[in-house]
Image (cartoon, rainbow, N blue to C red; front, side, top):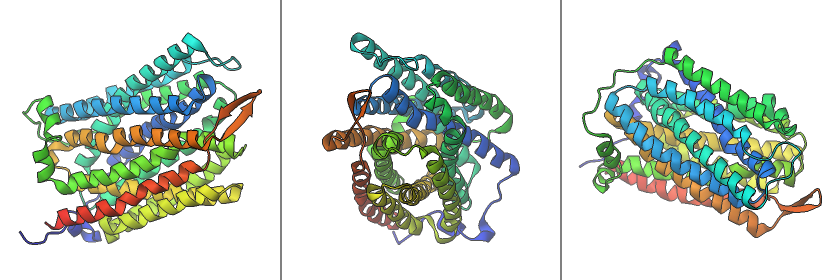
Length: 438
């Protein structure tokens, strides 16, 4: 068999790009943004909540993140295959967002009240078990609705010629979500009003679920006749991997990038608050997120012009450079500059592998592929990354004293560890290029 190019290559010119309608863009942005808003609360602020009201032990956060990742992956595998079997995504998105919002609002009822001492002994174990279980239930609903059904719907609604732009915008949504949380709701967390904090995000998610019923149109994807379990196992079979090496090597690249992000991301707010003692960290992060969002959107346009493969390694290099810079940044201006480079590179890298994955996704298995993606791009990174970060934090033994109690605190070592993980990306890029040419 002679050399062949990537499927997306012919569609990178302006003339072959398919226009996306206004209603589709509205659904992409609204449903996608609120989903990322809920994930921001779960991925970042829930960790701060646990640290402040339950236990400062970084291993508790690592357990929380890992358990929710496993629950999310199982849900995505099953719901993704189910949505393929039905040939519809809208109902799953709508119902899932409503249930997701209810669970998010429930977080505020677990943990010590504001001003009270953190639980100890049996109460501590009970609080840890309760928050982990609730997080797992929330992650199951959220991933079924967002990672399985909504992501498959995005694949249904796009083509290789416009996915750079779409994934460039989708990559910005987590940054905008963080900005909204930091700008509008961070004061509630500082005041210890966690019930209201989680309640507001929960209500917004519920309302978005209701609105999505009217915003989203199913794309008429032919329903599959094979069983859900058969569809789930199809993507995990060695024969499937051998038939689609480019898809699975792309997902392997995503695994490495995702693991790198999870080494530092669960601990970054605690790092800014407790280690650097930046009181205005919310303002600093707001500036970073605005700048990184603009750069990410521009990057999506460049990606469509030059091709995803050519764009990937430079994006990862920018991400790594930002991580290294964060290791040495101490003063606020240096932190803002370094974090902007880091976040822009991270979002550009994730947007690229996301668009590449869509290009290699079979049209009739968009839902089932999301389950495989969750294993390689979410579950493995969210298990390996946080525990690697926790090990680095424990090994560095940085501490701070609060009310006479010495507590562990994340240090800058988490960023250099995250950068070290990225050295695997060029190796996988070479292997993927060979698979595409074969």
